[in-house]
Length: 277
Image (cartoon, rainbow, N blue to C red; front, side):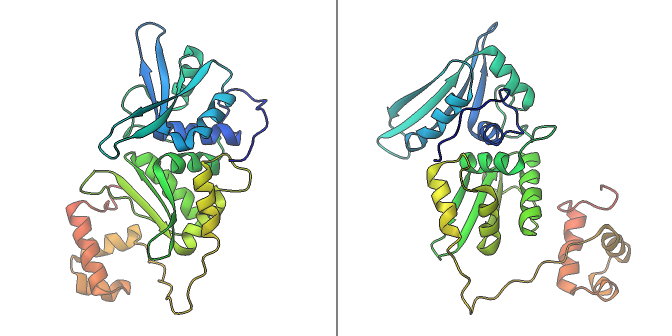
């Protein structure tokens, strides 16, 4: 992780790259506990191998906080050592809460902050905490993130589309009821380069993984999938009015299969109708 100069800004000013990253990380992996009166604390627990980022959070926070470690047995390993950053100051907790980190359970209700903030640093914080960057077993670059929040998922998709041009449709998976957002190949390379720029605050292992993505070159025999043609509200109206995928295919210049699938999605609520929009 790159060394950072002391911060000379207001605590949690999200226009500052380090604070935007820190807030994204806290929204994904932090937990605000509310006690009686003025009591309570903010806690982040991660693998001990990534402890350096918690020391950075401690340095960025002008209130007393501490970093500790604990070793325990889990369902995944006989010996698991984690690092914990704890912050109790009410003023600091209030500021973080007002920015958009709720007390208690937050996975579905958390959303991007209001106002101006450093977008690529904020998204990198979320991906460092709840995402993955690397090379698949098939040798393909990828950037992935999981979230239970529809608004966080939509924001990440919007950001990635601005960077790469790739569109994604949000759908919760059946097993965990969360969103799995994935980018591969050139889209992953472009996204990683935008997020993990030189000197950015990040997990060292993910910074290294992002750098490795840039070395991938598409094999000459690997085809490039054409960009999907998105459905417009006007096309949806025509499809619903005709209520026949064969006739709609002729009228809209699409395949019958595409019209059949879209019509089914409009009927069962998987896709919003023009009236819903």
